[in-house]
Length: 123
Image 1 (cartoon, rainbow, N blue to C red):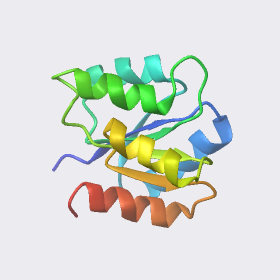
Image 2 (image 1 turned 90 degrees about the horizontal axis):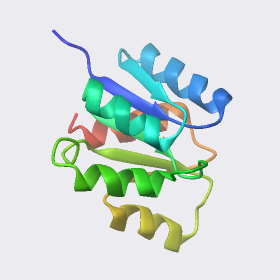
Image 3 (image 1 turned 180 degrees about the horizontal axis):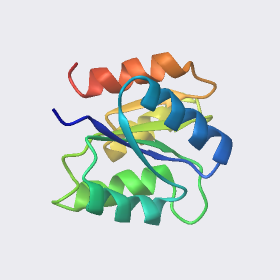
Image 4 (image 1 turned 180 degrees about the vertical axis):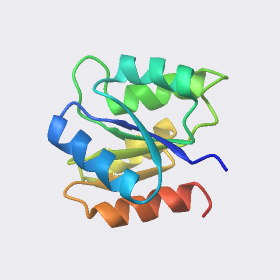
């Protein structure tokens, strides 16, 4: 049986490590990227089951990442969960309007994030 692959994207190495460890402890296979353009390359190469991405990153934001993925027929079907300290209703709406499957605000409980990802995956 193949494991579920999660692509985690964050420019903060501490958050990236936290996400990686938490998903691995729950049995997920994790690949990672530190910015949006790298995430697009990893997604095209690895075809993850889901992407968990920070919004505020240099060069390409998480919103831009979602938008670019939705425009690519090869990546459009991969759900993206956005993770951000931006917690205003307008920010959340912008993320969901861009095509994100869910929006989780920081600070977050790691197991809550895993549960939200499982809900997006239909588990």
